[in-house]
Image (cartoon, rainbow, N blue to C red):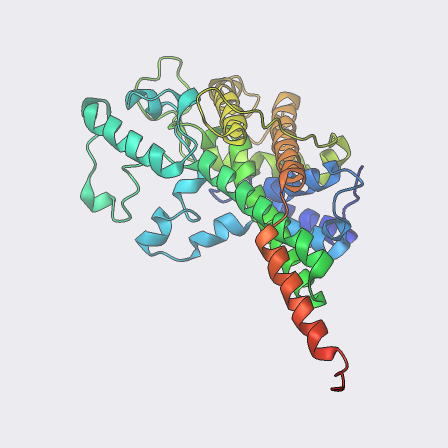
Length: 358
């Protein structure tokens, strides 16, 4: 099913097309909103209708920028925490440097933290020495946690659907409204990190110019390439939701068949997606070298437009699949059900007419 954009959302996005680019994954005014809008358009007719109202469609688009808004505070602990910085990327090339296989990392975040810390210590010669004066937020030690953030947001959304189903049957109107609001919030915020995953420069240590290690092919090492991919090219090309939303494909449920190594299949699916986007890092740099993705005041090349369009559509497709899978896979919250049934019984007993003694 294709869900149309609200006129207000479309006009807002087009009006923002003249704003300058900033260094963040798919600028909020461009890619991030569209990833969420494509995902919404991909949902089937039977998906909960409240998500598709005009108000919630705009809410979902707005929440796509939440991950970057977490950066509005400067405290180092916030930058290290899940939302502000380290959850927006993963430098896949550094995993083998620590003796880890990207295709086999554990689905538990803290298990990965322990494994990476041990691997970094064991292979210290593979990593640059950290300058404490430039590491006040203590993030330089880490490789990024993007796949774990997406996986954990999926689980939060799945949890929200488990209790929403019960509240819709046995809850008060206020409880239903609050539970639905939580669903929309988790859906929208998750979209930011899925959008990050679709931007190849969020999967690599060469995230803003080819600056780490040898550069035998002479790829650009100029800072600003990241923001150009995120938004500058988008604005220069005059792209809009109309370039993307009509191309949304129907969301599908992700296979949750158990993995032989015990890892969560949903996490494996997300990690496989990120690994695939990492394979596009060098082709992206080659496109820039060939003049197909350069900021040279020339009309944007068709190859660059198609690359950008494809990546944003990939993000929207993965996000729609995650939303649909969370809804379909959510079990009923049996504890909440028993609690609400008991509440109904108590209220019924209070309102029952008193019986006279014989």
